[in-house]
Length: 389
Image (cartoon, rainbow, N blue to C red; front, side, top):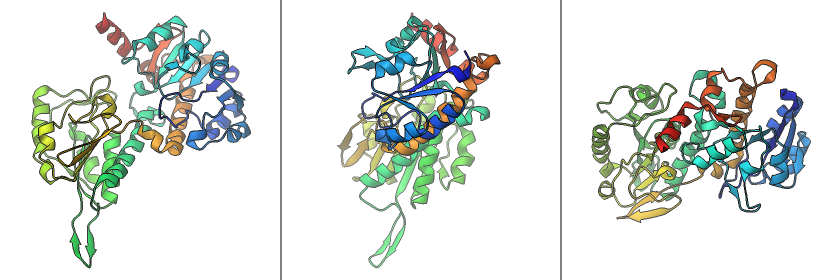
């Protein structure tokens, strides 16, 4: 199949609370100018402030229902993992024709049903979250795009909950000291949180298990928390590894020693495919001053704080603990713009083989492809399935 023959579909996301869309009109225009046919479900971009008329002007064809859209597609661009469509009483992957491709966050190691459906319908599944963090893949790194949004938004949420100023202020009533912010985890979300907190005038400290990020932390104006760090805490493709139990204990001690003087804690510690590490216990929360705030960006994977409830704001001993979910949808316009560019570049890389076929030898594709025409090709997913036996 030639790339110019492909029918690409952009459905409306059905994940609760999602306001983003997988491709914006600008990306549609790029696809249609290369000879592709693009189908967009009516209303797919409305919540992200991309109206149907802009998609039509870019060359897309608007489709009324999800069933007609999916069944006509050679390639489906999505954000959230496929799930049951309550409106149609049907699973999204069941609506796809045999041999088609779906690109998006697939969560293959969290939901075995996704793998079963990909196999059943002989589908090719490309997981955006499995794209390796190598230089050549930076333009496709949707995890980094969404993490950028999350880190930025986390600071704004903290400022909203905190009952004091972030910056140092010299007023007629006297000097107001800056807020003290502790960022746990200096990945993309953490670095963005550091940068925004510093720009807002806060005094920022940051901690990470990877010594290599110290320079980045300090370049953004934060103090790197000193601690003996373990070696080899990063995978070949740039993701954090699970820390040893003894190290996590020492890490919690280092964090706990700072909590009594910290106004805001932003936690971002995640390990792919596993529950988020517990770093702040209920007892540690009691050490914080009343009015302090914890923004737990790991809430959707269990949370870094013992008191976190995903999607809820709780208060314990005067401390506010907020567990935000679906943060990219709080900035849907730009989150969709960035993701759209990521998936467009990933699509071009996927179909870059001889005669525009899928290039299975490419390092990025080899890591991100969960299945190819129904056959499981991902080593990560194979290991997951073996462990499930």
